[in-house]
Image 1 (cartoon, rainbow, N blue to C red):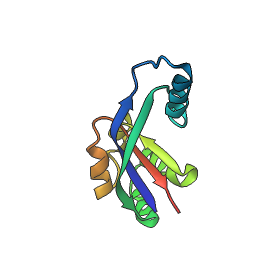
Image 2 (image 1 turned 90 degrees about the horizontal axis):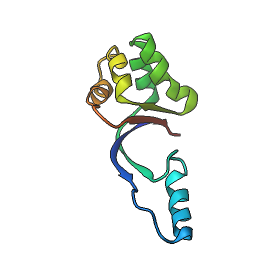
Image 3 (image 1 turned 30 degrees about the vertical axis):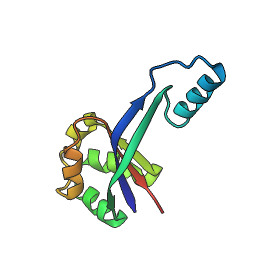
Length: 114
């Protein structure tokens, strides 16, 4: 099963705490797995796709789509940003393509789950 997550909200912490221990906790909790201090992304699962169905969609698509989307089977997770969307217009027609084409900001994450 492939779950499709979409950024629904982003929290950016802009204030510094006066207490150094609390500041360290904030820095740790907002950087673990996020890559930058003070940012937390809230993702919502907006679609689930059977692996075979996604493989079929990919097989009927251009080379870039096969590479970009197909990496979910290789790495377990793929991020798709608005700059990728233009290159994915060649994706085979599907509800999945419609979701991708609606992305104007933020990002989408494809995650393989067992």
